[in-house]
Image (tube, rainbow, N blue to C red; front, top):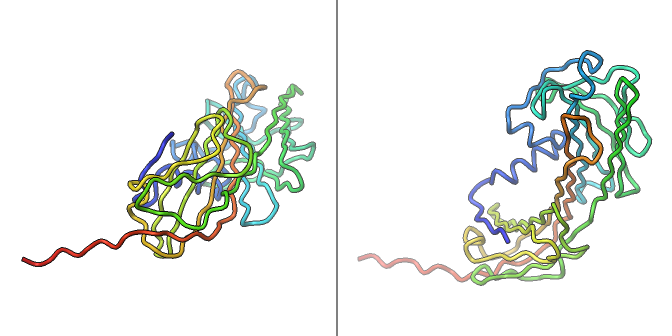
Length: 252
C-alpha cells in the first residue's frame, strides 16, 4: 500500500494531467525527450521505439483518446513521421498524424463504443507489430462521509487491482485542497486514507474521483522496445468531509 500526503500538485498527478491533456506521454515530457522529427524511412526499422497510450475521462463523455508515438534512439529519441508504406492503426482504423513544436510527431484517434483496443504498427519493410489492451473501468463505492481525523477505507467498484496497475483516489474539498492515496496491491479493491493523508482538507462539501492506470511493456516490439500506458478516470462524486475544529492557542 502506498499512501502519500498532498501538498500542492504532486509530481505523479502533474504527470498524469500532462499525460491526458498533451496526449498521454507524460513520461516523455518530464524526461527531456526530443521533439525533433525525422522520417521513418531514414532509420533502421529494428531500432524504432513504440509508445502507446489510451486515456479515458468519464466526465468528458464516452470517447477514449488513443495515441501512438515512434522514436529513433530510444524512448527519448527523435520522433518519427511514418513513411509509406508504414502506418499505425487502432481497431483496424488508421490513426491521424499530428505534430507540434512541443511533442514532435505523434498519431492519434478518438475511439468510442469499446474498452478494448488493438494497435497495429506496420513498418516500411511491411513487418507488423500488434499489441492489445483492455481498459478496466473503476468508480468509488457508496460513501457519503470522509472522517479526516481517522483512518478511512475507500472501496471501489470494478475488478480488483491487477498486475502493473495502480488505483489512485483523490478528494478535493470546497476550498481547493486535495488529498490522495493509492494502491498497487494485486487483488485489492480498496485504498486507505490516513489522517496524515487528509491533514490539508477542511470540513464541508467535497468531491472524490478515482484514476486507474496500467503500464506494461509491449509484447510485440522491435529491438528498441516499447510500452503501453492506459488510464481510466472516473466521474467525480460528492462527499462530505468531517473534521474536528482546531482549537485556537490562547495568548500569553
